[in-house]
Image (cartoon, rainbow, N blue to C red; front, side):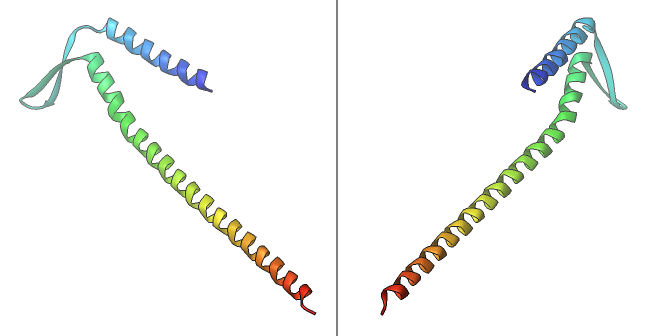
Length: 103
């Protein structure tokens, strides 16, 4: 799976380099009347990709963080329950041993 991910990133980087090499001329972006931004097409495309990628990445990281907190909470609850069961069994064993020892 890691090889597929690495290959995809390499393919994307190669495509961006090819696009950059093929489009060296500056372009004019008309933001609104009277405001023109001159930039190169690759910078515009890479910026748009990053703007589109950032919200998705943030949502994925937040979901991963939330799930790891939930798993940790469930694991601590499970450990506490196991300890409670172990303590209850030990107390029952001690109580049974006391009743057997009494005449």
